[in-house]
Image (cartoon, rainbow, N blue to C red; front, side, top):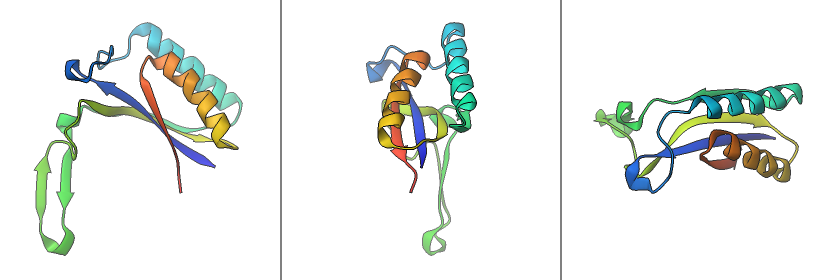
Length: 114
């Protein structure tokens, strides 16, 4: 089963301790997690994302042609990056999410892909 694993980050209003960019130690720890996932055949894909201010929301339902510069949702936290993992079950996903959260020093959201 595939899992979408979102890395959550936030600015000062979020109350989180994160800075927006990974420290050298965090980047190295994430590289270690990625290597373990690859070695186990569980890593599918990962990427960082730009800041929400660089987002554009397009709504062309009923040919409305609406374009909104900025994020779809204005929230104190945002998705700063993500993984796609190929895992046997939810328990494994949660165990690995704990490792990933410690490595990147961020909150992690785990969602099964339908």
